Image (tube, rainbow, N blue to C red; front, side, top):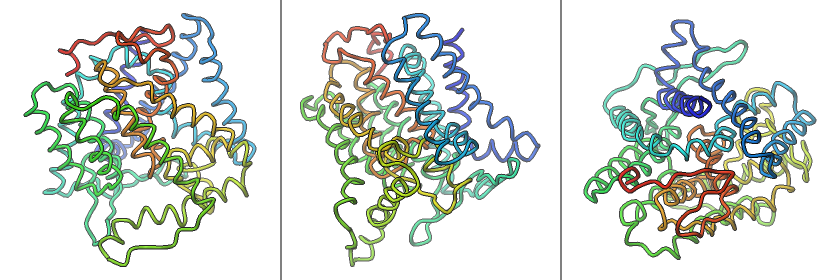
Length: 423
């Protein structure tokens, strides 16, 4: 019953996220906006149920202790530097991450079921963006109120040059890009035909382009050889890629503590393409360090709600998106988190992507997370937050990744998936 509830909660949340634009507008119009948040409540209940049931089944482990202590620590620190409502908003925003972290074992145990719904979800998401090039959807730019808060239902915004960033059925263009990318890589990994893999991947790229998400385009470039030729690629260089991109993602915000970056390309096209990157180097990341230093504790952080979306509602004058997976967690946990970051990146070297289909799936999701996370606050992006929590749980729970037979650790039961169910 618990595992069925976890899978149902995951499916309900994914559907609500993929169709956030039309669903939010429709439910708000008929006065039923509260239904929008039922999947989030289900995630919360699933996290609580799984977190309490797992220790009862397998005994209370060090991993369970860490999983319990770390969020409580971040909540207590957040209460010191912000407020209870802001902390609550921070917990709400991070629910998909906590869900992936706590319920990852259930999702991986039933991985064939998860992959079974991917083709339909991918077709709806990619099709929604491609159709958006021909049709202006009525929910674009829609907003509504929840109590005293103004909530953005579906963002309407433009890139440099006045081109609209298309979101399809999603809430924003970057949400749509992330959804198409995640579903696209899972789809091609389960497709045996080389021709179909090429068609699916080309369609995925075509659906990403109208969103104008440069970070996701970078992910697509990195994943393209793996998606199309994974059976022909040597494993040794593949294994080093997550650690390499993770080290770059970690070094980028740290570099702003040592250097000032003010140069910009004189060519207008190059300047437009690289504007977001230089904005992070010159403004966002230095200001995030200042936020941690002046309004938090360098060692202990600001806690949950101390950066990102929660600030945009309750601390607007200090708002900082972070826009880097490590920068975000630095502000939440402080410098005490640095050894954990390094250990996690070292653990990625143990993945053997060519040994099993499960490891290849985890590998690609991890690589996408680290590449996109170098320039984006992915832990507040619903799709990547869930994926991030899942891959972190995998890395923390699987002590024998190098084994060719992929033995099943007691803390994370995983099935041996057949080629028929995973290609």
